[in-house]
Image (tube, rainbow, N blue to C red):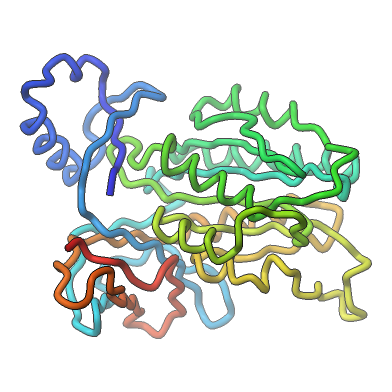
Length: 331
């Protein structure tokens, strides 16, 4: 796995000491956020750590924050083991930072008023999460997928990119799976794996009507790539009252039926009213009640590329949802 950590550019002047710097950097990661950094300066550090993202809810579906490692058990191919790394996102302090791609459907199915409300809710959402030293990227999609803003932790640049979003009034296709695939590549190639020397939570927030049309990449391929990139996909399904039943409960969309959300550890949120603010606050609560586990993988002992099953459970009977169910150990 190739991870990213941000350090001062002056440290690049000693290439002959690279092995030593790798050791120092790994010690820094264990010590926590103890050194300053400049935005948008990234180098690569090779590690073998296998990471898992976990959402925890009670029996009513409410996110459960502020748990510790002692509240969990981790099983690797049925054998309990202690993780080499654990960290929780906490809203009450400077917990785990976030790397988020906002992927917005701008196809013809989006109305002008919806776009206006959406841009205002997006700006508020990003502002509230800015305290986490988080990085955001913004993409849009209809027939084509475009990067509107690459990763930044500058609020002014993020707000400017959201303001510039426009509907593709002639766009009849909705390449939602292609958009998620594009977002995963952004996270893998340009998103900071670490921020303030803490492991980031990688998230794609897909905002659409839930009816993908014309995609090149398949859902199964996107799920596999999301799992490999330790990325969770969340979906915000915009109002479409023609699809509501008499109970006002939305019908299952093709996007949800594909398994993309469930199998990456995400969750679907429905906008059942004209106000999008409650929707984004629920998403915020979900994202900031998650936990990261990482450990050095066991060496391959069976067939090449054999998947090792990993199961993370709550000692207190809480509902645990993983972003992926296993990993392929190095040979």
